[in-house]
Image (cartoon, rainbow, N blue to C red; front, side):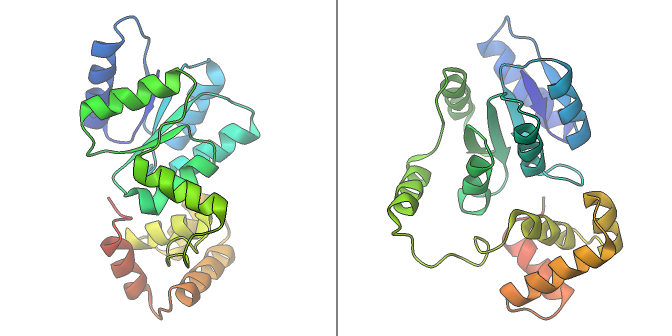
Amino acid sequence: MLIADDHSLVRRGLRQILADAFPTAEFGEASTVPETLASLRSQPWDLLVLDINMPGRSGLDVLKEMKSANIKTPTLVISVHSEDQYALRALKAGAAGYLSKDSAPEQFLLAVERILGGRTFISPALAEKLADEMRGRRQAKSALERLSDREMEVLRLIGSGRTVKEIAGLLSLSVKTVSTYRVRLLAKLRMRTNAELMRFAIEERLVD
């Protein structure tokens, strides 16, 4: 089982929970997106436990890279963010489950067992949202839901105080492209300044 999270204490805690439940399992750890992708490419894993917030590129980028490289490792995404913010994005990107980091260890193990059994793990509330979406009954999307995955990532980095140049470097984009995303964010969120974007990102708990 591969555990990808940029906080060593979180990795250690998750590993201990999993080791107690699966004493014969082998474990690997990664703290960045490149480390995660390198581990996935170097050997097969039964499960990837993936933090959505990683330094620079996000867990969503890992899922997209996995799909492009045809890496089929079942993935449980964990996050400090609510389901409303990232769960649907993660599942659409290929995750087999989404769980909040404040969930009980028993809930975490339940999610892992279901995913290892070839099933998907979603909460009842998220299942209802997915059903509504399939029936075309969802109400007008929230401001966050209207943003693309890349716009969400740029917003998160703006919220963490990164400059346009720093964001461009982290996401391997041109400064002009990041500036375009910033303009789109201001328009979609009906804001005028970076300070407003930062405050919004913090209020929506997009920043750790």
